[in-house]
Each structure stands twice: as C-alpha cells, then as structure tokens.
Image (cartoon, rainbow, N blue to C red):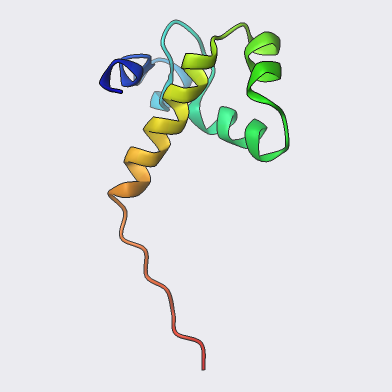
Length: 77
C-alpha cells in the first residue's frame, strides 16, 4: 500500500499545496467529492485521465490523514 501513497504529492506551487495526483493538478479532495457525488471510479479515471490506482491512492491518503485526527462527538441528552 505504501507504493500507492507515492502517487500523492504536495507542492506549495501546485494547487496551493493541496495533495494532488503526481503529475496532475487533480486534488485528493476533488476525487473524494466526485466519489461522494456518485461518480464511479472508472468514470473519474476516464474523465480526468488518471488511473484507478490514482483513485485508490487518494482514498488511502484521505484514510491516513483522517486516521490521525481526533474526533470529538458531543453527547446528546
């Protein structure tokens, strides 16, 4: 799985430093939004000329970042 993460890069001169698919200006958050809107990974790959592994890399990157976050849930009364 570590190989997948090599597909994600951050450069302050590209998309304001957001994580992107290497060699593109396609951000991880854009891929997540497209998936959330109902697009299939195959459609995204074709429309944006990236690979399915690039999409998997974006998902893995997001999971790793969120896995380090502390989420505080308020108790409902």
